[in-house]
Image (cartoon, rainbow, N blue to C red):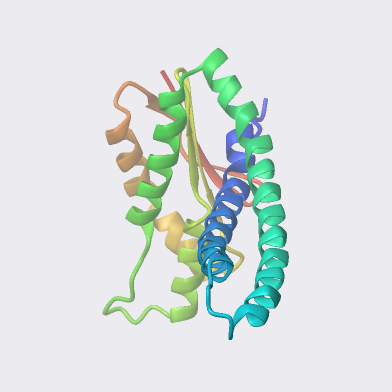
Length: 195
């Protein structure tokens, strides 16, 4: 029986994009709000008409930004809340946070820089782009780690050459779990661990 990707794995990248968009929109919204407050409290009669016009324009932009912020936050909540409820009911929120933290830590561990062997820049870019999609899902009874294989054969070989190192790295983080060998799963390389 093939193990399917968990909800956490399927929504992880989407959640990251939504969180980035939400953060960017909030950072854009803050200066608009400050400028709006400044223009509303402008006392100069010379700038009064200009202030009124600019205030209306800024209020229009602000309401548009507020709508986009609400959509992003709503989308993020719609995707995250089911996972949180499932984790609370069947697993642990600590495992959810730990899954996120270890995913980023393993990504940093696997990123390659150019070395003296003259590896092609394109090959390294493909490798690193693929590594940025790797993810680990930690549960009380099992762990699943997936790393996307790039389409380029040479970049794929870089990932396949690091399988043993990666398996040891994951095993060292989770000594209570026994891990299978890496196996191909569609365009992903997967390793499973059970307690």
